[in-house]
Length: 242
Image (cartoon, rainbow, N blue to C red; front, side):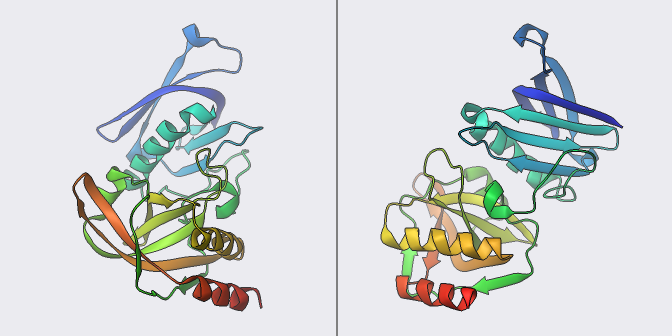
């Protein structure tokens, strides 16, 4: 099996085919190489966010072999965008650890990944009547994939988010799949409580789930997210950790 470990350079995604240009461990920009990955051929994918001390990586596995491409923080949004596109077109591979010698982690919180590994427990949070829409950084591509209407949303504590280290990722759930549609910023007390609660829950294999609605806004699609009260978050956390 072919195993390659290189460095991300640039990529395009057209007609459900990902075309990556990359540099080998000792190859300069002038020697960038290229590989193509049809979504239908992917049998495993893994995505790890960069940290202050370490590059992120995207690992793609096909029957031909495994390609791990390391990327820097400045490329994170572009790599994540392409990964989300693959998520929609290769559901059979999304979230599956590629076979081979590369180490992967099942910890959703530590990787800041979409909760696609399907934890064993689902915790439905109450709605105290508060709708949270403003200030959320939306992802139009995934909002369009999920579509307008009422949906369930899985909340995940963001780690290594270079823009907001304590944001809460909101993932719309549809047909057993989870799509990252935006983030709740950490600017208020409730979101800070929610971030810590989601971190504790995700580490125990529990999905924190809320209700909500995707609907049109003046600037595009957006999501009204129905959050529990601060007291309800505290009570749920006490029950989770008891």
